[in-house]
Figure 1 (tube, one colour):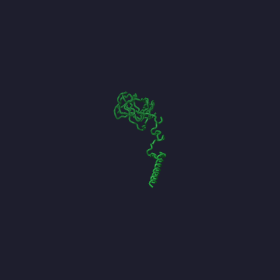
Figure 2 (cartoon, rainbow, N blue to C red):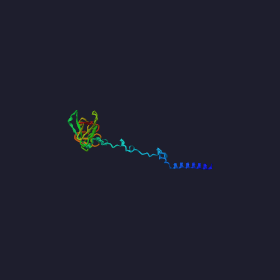
Figure 3 (spheres, rainbow, N blue to C red):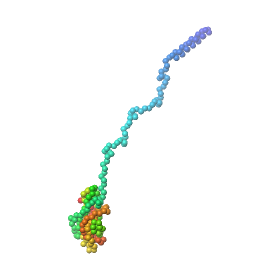
Figure 4 (spheres, one colour):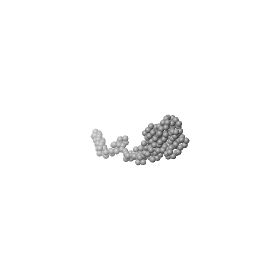
Length: 216
């Protein structure tokens, strides 16, 4: 009986040892069975070429074409006509009536740029080119409307002077005048036109009237 148990135990032990040996000599488990794939969250994020390609610059910063960047310079506005760039003359062909003489006062742009002439000239009679005015200056005749006249170089405008004979006034203190002192509109410098007339040195007698300038 004992001998049989021993044998049975040896057989059982021997069988168990054989199973362990077979398990040790068997194939190793495949890597896929023993390792799990890394989580998707740990995978590196690389941009595709289309995401990293340089985009075209916005239209706001695009280089403008020459037609957009070049602007034509606006012509300079013409300034007022001044005595230094004008010449003055009279034309007495207008005739006269009732003791008065009508003349055209002509101002010509003798400068190199256009200028504006607008309004009334100041006119007085003087003893000479540098002398003081004699008597009253010319009264403005407002029946002719004021207009803005642009005088190109060499162009002229005119106003009408009416001279009333000094002999028409019995209380006139006559003084010989050598000509007219002319102040262009809005100017303190003057021009002189030699043209002898009798003037009245006492105040209150107005021998001269002047209209606004008109284009020729």
